[in-house]
Length: 132
Image (cartoon, rainbow, N blue to C red; front, side, top):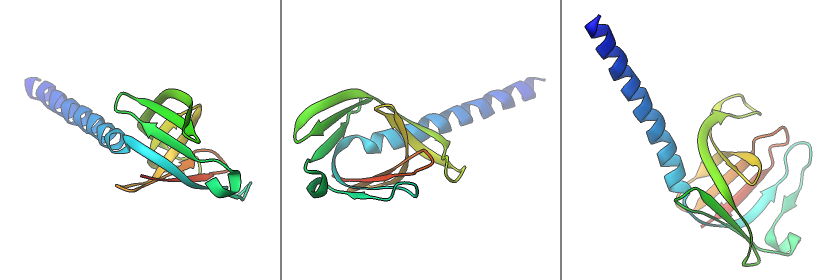
């Protein structure tokens, strides 16, 4: 019985450490200033929007304390919370890193040192591309 109890505790610790580590990596790497490059509509609403076609620049800043600050033409327009977590994508029913902010949830499709691509986690699946 004692071995079973110890095995249970060890298993619990490993699963807890994994889940905390996974969210920490995703949220830590997204912390930065991102400049909007373009948005591409999904299947139901195909479009291409860029700062030139829309007529304004957009920038978002993900802070280490869980806030996202949105700027339009260098004027702050929103300051809200964001959350990064693992979840299921609506379009492919697979597990992804998801980010939720400003009332929407997005799949983090690409995140590296210079690029951030998020896809709306809804039936349309509009894609937004940011650069550092």
